[in-house]
Image (cartoon, rainbow, N blue to C red; front, side, top):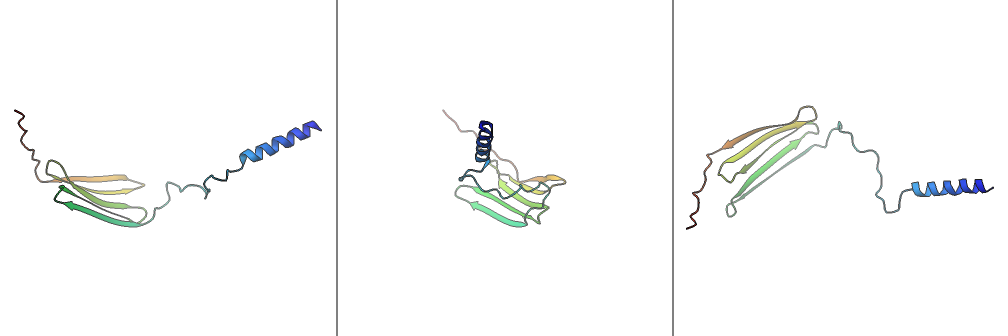
Length: 112
């Protein structure tokens, strides 16, 4: 009789430890597969602030399988860097980088 009680106590303990805690997040199923198509989207933003010299922009769109877009930023040396890109699951991220303008550097400050 004591071995049956021991088996029952062990089974109750195993069930209690295996059940989810009340404060654990809900489980909705398996995470999405890497090969699943994404959601289509489209966005863009731009900032041009003469006071702080911030000047940059980004636009991007996707049909769910191919993502493409571009971004630009004015660099500290005065040039504008422009990047045009595409990305998908077959070819990865492919970018074309170009620079507009000439780099210019201020004269060093005198500390005498």
